Structure formats: C-alpha cells, structure tokens
Length: 360
Image (cartoon, rainbow, N blue to C red; front, side, top):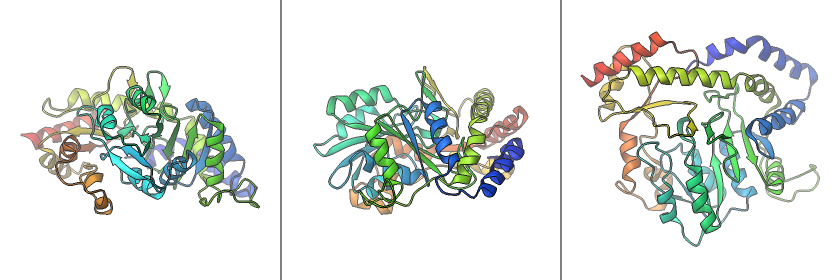
C-alpha cells in the first residue's frame, strides 16, 4: 500500500482542513462530522449516515439499532476479518456461518438459506476485498424469511452492484475508514448508513451513550463518535476517492494481463464494479509465490488464513476443519499483491515476473 503517496496528493488541502478544525475549537460532533454524514449519504444514496469511531463499533451499533440482540442469530461468512463475527457477538447475537462462492469468495446465497433457523434475524454479507456480495440473491432469501440485511461494506467504498453503490445495498450498511481503506482517514473511523429513519436515529443515539441530548438516556449505548478531525480529512478525500479507485482498477487490469495463466485472478461478475481494496490472487503454490516476491522485496500478504469458524475465540460455535471447504481452500490459496492508486505498469510487470518465478 502507499498511504504516503496518496497523502502527497492531498497534503495542502488536508493540512488546511485540520488546521481549521484546530483553530475552530470544535473537536467532537462538530460541523465537519455533520457535513461528512450528509455528503456520504448523498454519495451512497441512503437516507442518512452516522459517523462512528470505527467499523467494528459500526457493525455492532447497526445490529443493535435494528433490534438484534440476545438469542438472535445472524448469518455471515467465515471468510472475512474477525470484526464481522466479533460485532455480532458484541451485539449479543450468535454468528452462524454459510460458506462462500468459489469464484468471488463472497457469501453463497444458497448456503445462507440452508443456515436459517427460527432464531435468525439478519444476514450480514461482506463486500470482500472491494467487491459487493450478490445482494439480489441475498435479498431474495431475506425477503422469503423476513430477515434484515446488514451489509458489511467496510472494504468497498465506491464499488457498485448493478448501478447501486456498496453501502446502500441492504437495510443498513457499515464502512471502516481505517487508513489502509480506499477511503481512509488518518486514524480510526467508521460509518453506519441506512434507509429507515427510525433505525438511523437509534444508531445516532447508540453512538452517543444511547442519548439524544446528553440528559436522558434511552439505551445502554457506546462512546463511539467519528472524530471531527477525521471527518475533515475524509471530506477532502471524498472528492478524490473515485479517481483513486479508477487507478486501482487500471492496476488490476495490468495484473490481469501480466500474471501467469496458472494464477487465478479476482472474479468480477457482470454488472458489478470491483474497487480493489486488495488485489487477491489465488494459487495452490501460494507459499512459493510469496517467497519469490519477498526475495525481490515485494510486499504481499495472505488473508484470513485461519477462517472465522476455526478461530479460538469462536470455538463455542462448535466448528472444526472441513466444515466450510470453499472457505478453507481460499484461506490456503489466497495472496494479496501490491495494490494502490500509484502503482505503475512497470511495477505490476515486476510483481508478475516474481509470481512467475514462484510457480516455476
């Protein structure tokens, strides 16, 4: 990743925005948070957006705002960052896993249907690595069973599904603004979005101790507010992110061209746009490829090598090896290659040559 390179493109505007906040003296829930929430909702096509302290809090708050808690079940994917399942548990509910599709690595709608029980209240698909899940198929399952869809869009700012933006595809959605994200702050931050005014209002209260006015408290909530300085930074970057995403897509096209045929590229179904938070290739020779890249001092990383159903903290769910075979294969074969808006074609060719050495 190249956080510094992206910072150089916005340095003057970001520094001016931060100084304005410092001089203004409004640091908590000030004008930049309010403006960013409005601008984000307009960009995404949602009724409203609520800035929170981080994406994990956002997932928990979104679930609780929808009335999900003790005794409820939420179906999600085992091939994602731990925070997805962690947030479900923090909300008081139980994560129930469904396996993933072998091409996109997003949750399999057929697996969701098989995982539903009388206690299921919601589905939490993940827009993985920058690609939306198959939300039309997921919505059909949800509609047939009267379930909510809470979209984990933390990795997918700017991606689209049949003309709709990630973050608007479910009843609610959540983003993370961790610095490495496509739209990333200079610290932690997150966003809850929604289409229902009452649910959004509850999320707004939950982020502030369950209160509307700091005097009466309707819920046991959280101290989870998007920082005013982070909001100022994000407002600057919001005008840049589509261009940055387009450059990521160009880098991905170069990877698709230059990588050896033996390496599986990310799949992008028709009607979807991938914003390549990560460019994740797959190969049974993953470890040899990683060694070849590191020998050339090219950074790479394997993601979710211990899937959620095998994590020690979730052992109470009772899963073991072999329960989700597509997920376990993806965990053993995936490798994220360098991906950021400043990659050059020559750099991508160099990475591809190293990958080829690892396969040879």
